[in-house]
Length: 300
Image 1 (tube, helix red, strand yellow):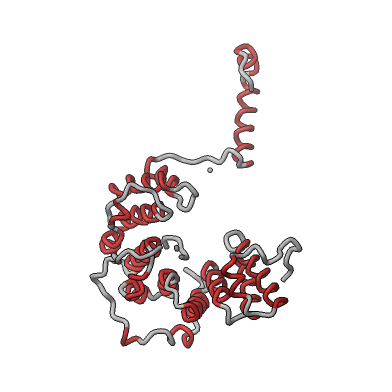
Image 2 (image 1 turned 180 degrees about the vertical axis):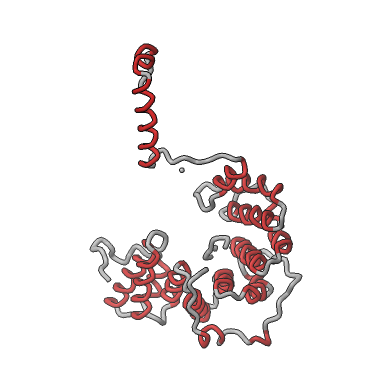
């Protein structure tokens, strides 16, 4: 796939460049430029980002950063089996646990919420930083919802982070997920306040809390730039002017399921079914550790 001339490859993080130094220089530059394209297009054109990630993967499959990038490109395009394979490979290469929540969310994407809950009770969760622990809590609550355990989902999200008045990068999504869980549990009367709290914390538009709040309050957003609405308004205004031209002149008035691809061999090799025991009492709490964030993923 073509890459714009202004993409040099030096736009990627220095730690990724360091990883690529294990490759011949020309190859490293090619991989770096493809990774830049993945990062540029991941949000706006995810399918294109996925294609660039596959090129990088063919060129340098033994580089952990490449496997991670390919994992996220697969994840955002709902290729959850591929994403899980890439995330596992990256984790094996680096020993890092920060991808644990998004790996669990891939299990949800593959229709296996019980495995996501099992992962929420694994020792790796205790090694996550605060952002990772909150992300794991969101995934676990989502898995409870997938299993129609709505009251349990509400309890899973109740935490010091939810109760805190301080605003952190995860605050809007956590509050929004709690509001949605309340609605699913039949407690819609409590949800409005949490949508309002989510909207207050959502400075970057990561949720649609404001729209949900407006729905509850019976308001309707109108896009002033919508050409169809503008045409209707102009038409109505024209009718008024035609009907009352003198009155206007006299008064001086001027005329808003996933496609899933699963390679069972790749997916099953990581887990031994006998080793998976769901900790139904797990509430997501984990000791705080040194300070990153995942996936994905939308409070699915």
